[in-house]
Length: 337
Ligand SMILES: C[S@@+](CC[C@H](N)C(=O)[O-])C[C@H]1O[C@@H](n2cnc3c(N)ncnc32)[C@H](O)[C@@H]1O
Image (tube, rainbow, N blue to C red; front, side, top):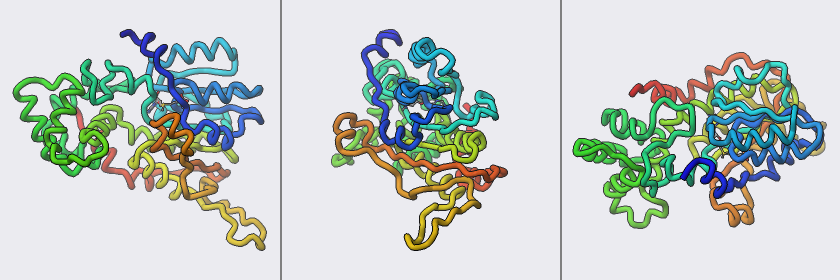
């Protein structure tokens, strides 16, 4: 199956599209930066409104064919950059003045459902798990990393308490022959966790999450992406993030809490108090989640959490405090193969 065929068969449903649109209000025009183009769902919806411009980024070269269609359809109003969003400061001009910067994290359906990419437990094709522009594959991680590093990655990025047993089993198996497919990896983890009969998800879920995060450096990408996006936004610009698992959401929540003042009026009898000392105005500490209808129509949306905040004019000086809160993620990122 070649890349084009897989794309034609697959559809990606943009998660919480209506909620995102009502937050960023493209009907008033402006420039929007979509850091995770994917199937182009958000970008297309924004471009339907006149006087809008979309600058889209995605690390995966496979989506370029969708981006090319939008480039033709909306000349001068759409541009695509195949890059990681941690390079946003090199891609987007500092004077672009975007109305909003949007991150919709995780995998697209094209990536998840393409057997060759090896994201699925059932993939018999290869142990790859690369989103694009990577330094190594999941095959390299599983077959060449030492036991200590492997166990650490599975613990920190997978929150898997059987990390040591799983790493031990992987080493034992690869000493006999290389672990070549995602299906083989899943079955090795399933053997370790065979007593977890009541486990609702595949018992390899946490290990797969961990290896995928490591291969794509997803968490440090997010940390850097949030910092750089905040530097690009000016007064009134909106930062929107849709995340799909607790490690991502923890980062987003921590970022907004650290750099925002909750902009809620303590009493309806008092004049609205405008706080100006944070980087952002945070309108709610609670995330927005998809409604039942959306979850029924698109089961992958069930774990999505949307958080957003509005930038004020405080200059962004130092992000060290935020980075320090996640220093173990950066440390794991330094592991070399
Ligand atoms: C869930 S999909 C986005 C779907 C999109 N919102 C839509 O409406 O079609 C996530 C996309 O983000 C991309 N991505 C993930 N991490 C990235 C990163 N660090 N830099 C650039 N793109 C990234 C993936 O390659 C994938 O195509």
